[in-house]
Length: 279
Image (cartoon, rainbow, N blue to C red; front, side):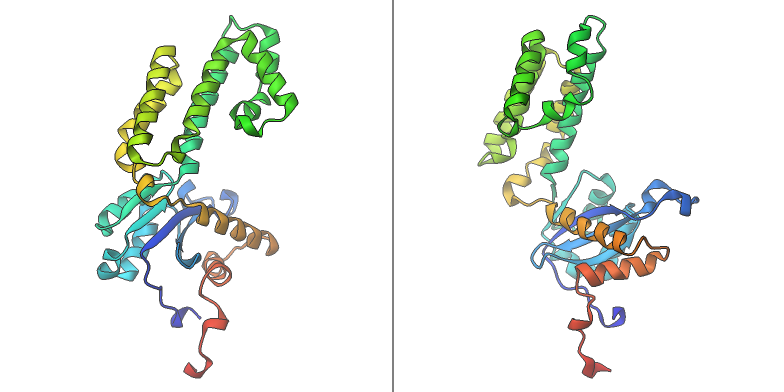
């Protein structure tokens, strides 16, 4: 099947990694080598290539296989905030625009927001009563969209805000930022993030200050979302299929075979697409 397979021409691809194996079975490997890099065509929604590891060399392999001329035809690459992938695109696909996945961007914001919660929790001036309300379980309620909260969750958050006004201010910043990717234009999005930055500066939130400074410094990449409106959610969906495949087969020891099975189940490497007359 593989010897008759040609990677199709693509203009928009989604790149993501998927965890493949435990280190105890491959003790000499680094953490990055325990992943596969999955390249998916956004148009056909199919996996077109799988490379070992999540290092820069993994995506380099794909670009080298398809060649310089076909690399020039790639216009958009959606990915998470993985520096190695971005470096590979910058080297091989000069015409391509990198679009960071909105889910991963939001997750970094949520991590900073949760760090602010932990700071309040660990503050010696915070009462034991409040600490019991904002422990680890409160994290998921705190990060949840306001409209998704149930009645008893809204009541619990209201009690916390009443006891500590900082949570009211954090909640306001969170709800404003969750509107970021819904902005119609790049200018509207930039105005919104400047508004958020001013609020953070005014309130003196340390972790959010560090986050927003890095966010604004990366604007040259973040703004690309408002031009193409694509994400790597397609790859995340394929990853769920791959994980299901791994469970059904009770794992794989032969990683080459695992890569081929992924391309067969999620891509074009399928006997249905092979012309039997060629044999």
